View (tube, rainbow, N blue to C red):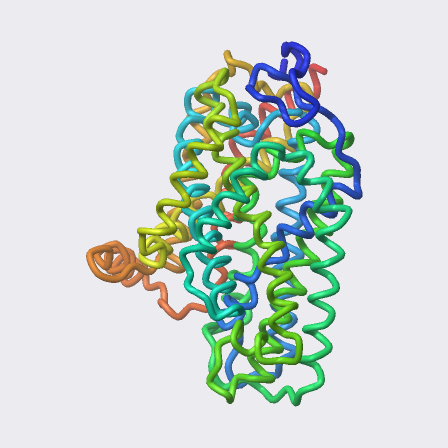
Length: 446
C-alpha cells in the first residue's frame, strides 16, 4: 500500500503542506510540458555547450551527439516522472519502494546537499548574467533572485501554471530570436572544444535530464495521469535541452573567433540583452525547483514539517551562500553527487518497471531492500573507472586514486566512452539479475 492511500484530505489547494497530506491531482499535459520545457531552458546549457563540442569535426556530428544525449536522458527522466504520477508521492518517498524507508534516507541526504548546491549555483548564474546584461553589481541580483525563487517555492503549483501558460512562450520567443541572429552568421567548424569523442559529448547532455530524476516525482505526483507526466517530462525537457545546447554550439561557431564567451556573444547581437534578460527571468524556475525539492525531500525524514517553513529556511541559506561562497569551487562535488545518482536511475527504472503494479511499498513500514545497494554501488564504481570526477587542490587525491585503478585494469583514461551509459548499463543489468526472479514469481502468483 502506498503512502498516498492512507493520507488525510489536502489542507490547501496547492501542493500539500506536509507529507501526511495527499497530492492534489491538478496538472495536465499542458502544465507538464510547460514546467519541464521551462526547466530545460537554462542559460547554463549554452555555457556548457563548449564541453560537448568535438573540435575540428563537422558541426553536424556535435549536434548529433546533442540529440542522442537529449533523447536518452529525457526518456529516463520521463520514466521517473511517470512513476511519480502513478504512486502520487515525492521522489525521495518513491525510493522507499526501492530501498526501504530507512535506507531511503541515504539518497535523501545526498539529494538535500545536491539541491541546496544547485539552488545556490542557479542564483549565482542568474545574478552573473543579469550583472553582465545590465552592467551593474552582482549582489543586488543575488538578493532579488533568492527572494523571488523562495517566494515561488511557497506556491509551487501556482508557479507551474504560470510557467506553462505565460513564461514558456516568452522564453520560446527569446530563443527563436537568438537562433535567427546566430544562424545569420557563418558557421565554420570549431577548433576548440571539451569533448574527446561522440560518446563523451553525449555524456554531458545525458547528465542534464538525469540530474532532475531525483526531483521529478516532487512535481509529477500532481499529474492526473502517468502518460501525461511521461510525455511532459520527456518531450518538454528533451526538446528544451536539445535547443539550448544547439544554441550554445552554434553561438560558439558563429562568434568563437571573437574571443567572447557564449553569454557575452549573445548579449552582443541586436536586442541580445533583452532576449538574454528574458531567459534570465525564466531561469528563476530552476532555482525555485531546487528550493522546493529540498523542502519536499526533507519531508521524507520529517513528514509533518511544513514545506513552507522548510523552503524559507533553505532559500535563506542558498541566498547567503550565493553572496559569500565560491560556488565554482563546489561544482566538482555537485558533479560527484550527480555521478552517484546516475546508477541509481538505472536501478530504479529496472526495479520499478519489472515489479507488478501494487508491489511498490512507499509506506512508513516499507521493508529494506539492502541488496539493491550493490548494483547502485557497482554502477558508481563503473562511472568512476570510466571517467573519474575531476578535483583540483586537496581533492586531487580522489581523481588520482581512480586514475591509478584505471591503470591497474588497463583502462585508457582517454577511452572515449560515455560514463553515464556504462554506469547505467552496469546498474541496470545487475538489478535485473536480482529483481527478475522475484518479479516473475509475483506475476505468476498474481
